[in-house]
Length: 620
Image 1 (cartoon, rainbow, N blue to C red):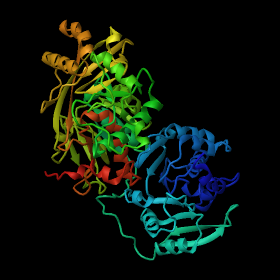
Image 2: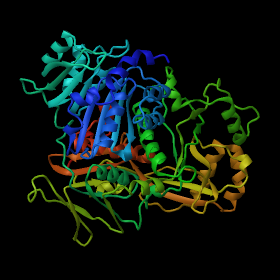
Image 3: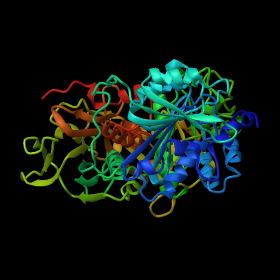
């Protein structure tokens, strides 16, 4: 294979029957014994062998940390087949390589979070130039592998800018291993604050470098607003048992928090997350906007949960989604790379032909038309309630339903670290914790000690039993509204769903008969032939209706993270997911946890900052 020969020396170096050189040089796995987390940084992923060896060591070690973070960069990623071929001669690694290969897709420039071992092994893979990507992270590594092979498109190991970027990601005492032993590398590491020594290598390498970060000066610190002090897991109250609350509760529980989940409804997903079925599809824009990049990261996070914890064909289906374009928005970037086709591409003639059956045009649209349809290969449908229920099975979560929270009381005088009491309408304390996460949608704004700029959005959908399948598209379609042609309802019968209305500043989820006709008019525009087939169902009021209230922020992006670490210590929020709760919830839960624990971010720092709650100026 094209790149395999280039990386073969790394394969020989990093794997031996006894002790992998990287682990040995960093004192692993003994060094991570009893630690809550361990963070590894690697400057070139290559064939993934360092990652696989470290993962295997984590699995085999009884005193392993609760979470293993592995952050790596790669300018020219290999394909999944090459990953498998590299691990083929190592029986202990091959099953892990198979799991890695299943998630090895859609690797566009930027960071990608790949999840293993029920969320306890996290690979944060950066595609692009290492020194540029490392500026988009704020974590401190415990171990570093500085790659010594230089295959053209990856950064030169002796590049002083790369070495400075690595040093910025180290804490005092971080251990580093490198097979690049030139004087320029040694000098560069020394100038960056490392104590460096040469050690005997593993054939065919004569020697290797061992180093640890011990600068003679005090390293410049990242501002506290960007890199908060890590919090030790303790008690946590999450208010809201919808998508946002369940995702935050699951992410925090995996890190050792004892989470009490409170919700006013009688069960989980009682509010907007009770939607019968929802669509997952990436947002596309010609300039690959902030929202487009965030939606892809969010989709990857949601699908990882669905594929490991839900039942395909019952709870979710990666069916793909076809997007009809009625205007110039939502197009592909002009330089859209091959890796992007995992996410979205122009619809092919077969997909357009199937769409035409639901549109009823005499001449189907073609990919050469001025505004061709898009095929979202990474799209599909999913049942929000099932996703919420799956997230809440994470050990460490105690749900309490039918509990109406009236207010919060900060008790910092009794606890310098900050503690909160959750109070009901009668003034009784119903829960107390060091951390509170508000994830109650629009109601989150009424519980904060600050002004959250939230706008309520009411939406209604229509759904019914599928009858004439010949008039329905074989896959979901979105455009002005969205249509899911076939999903099993709670009775196991095939159903369709069309939605949704969009009513600003409306705080109640009542059903409106007039909205059903508005939905039908949307269906007429989106899929005329399908609308004609379903007209008797609408005319005879045989459709079912569902309504919910979502909320949005002024910039239409989620609000996630601590509100004010100084004035309101221990009070966080995860809300304003809008109509993309299915895409954003799991990602936001991980982002909140990363901020609280000073972990590697699952996305680039500039993307994460666009969601941070502190981007708004709060006042009493």
